[in-house]
Amino acid sequence: MPYPENDSISKLPPPEEPPRKNRVTPRQALKHLLFFIVTFISVTFVGIMWVGHTANAETYWEMWPQGALFATLLLAFLATHEFGHYFAAVYHKVRVSLPYFIPVPFGIGTLGAVIRIEERIRDTRSLFDIGIAGPVAGFIVSFIILLYGFATLPDPSFIENFAGHEHIASVVEETGRFPDTPPEAPENSETIFLGNTLLYAFLASFFDHVPPMYEMYHYPFLFAGWLGLFFTALNLTPVGQLDGGHILYSLIGYRKHQRVARLAFGGILTLAGTEAIPMLFSLTQDWLPIPGFSAFLLWGIVAMFLLQKGYRSDLRWIAPVWTFALGIAALTLMFGSGIEKTGSMIWVFWSFFIVFFVKIEHPPVLYERTLSPARRKLGWVSMVVFILCISPNPIYFIS
Image (tube, rainbow, N blue to C red; front, top):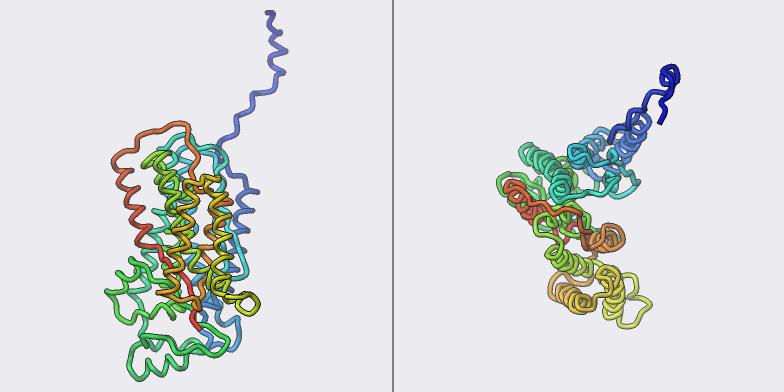
């Protein structure tokens, strides 16, 4: 084969350098920064509704420092969690996006943050490292925030900073402590309760002046720490492509994880029933016959649809899990919380989110690599963290 003359070679363009994986362009960095800024603003102004000192402020703008403090704490957790995933993916040379922060103008001001894995993770060791890096990093930050909040608690008179708490403030002034139960809510209003967790209750037992769970959300460090630990637990749910699904799949393999994930989803569906049935009861009691039974029947139809899709029409699982989930939810409402107490619908949302987005079962990876003993210990510790930080009834309302 003839070769070109030397002068022809000199005219060839120099070979292009292959694009570096995970190289961030200025335009990409600016886009992600703008999402973060908008989310910070959103959390700040929605956070004012939770932690703003409404009794002492004449205008909404006077409370922005309290909202900004809450936003700083919550986004510190979210950023640490997502960058934990990001740097683990970069370490394993997996193509990944920077974190996307998601603002919303209600709730706590954000739906969280996500990264986008842009290629398939090929082996269980990389899968484990990427999956666990976020929860470990986020847990540490949230734990520190919560500990600082407990260690710097003001005395109970702090509640005087919030309008509409005059009755509680009067009890605090007389007794020096919060009342065990909240005052009866005014007509057409409800008292918000946050669900306790094993870790929160354990830490709270070492400190004085700990507010009750119906007032805790006025304390920015406690509220942000509680949210961080609860969101860590949600991500550690051992199903699908959630962090917990990645971790448990790497620990026990595809077949065993398939069974555990289906059982875990059955538990989530049970919790969803304890929220959905009271909500359906309140919505239909004026126009459906036998409203309690009608609410139960409506949720049974929805639960069957979710199981049919989530378990891919596997009747060996659908029938027993459907029966168990509805039976336990009904017994819980009959002999426990009652059908009049409404929840936040978190578990209903989580059930739909799992079925339609992250799926119940984890897709198989190409290469099964044995985890090191240190990784295995850390993986099982993360499952313990899931138990310590989850709340079966995270937010509920009592009239």
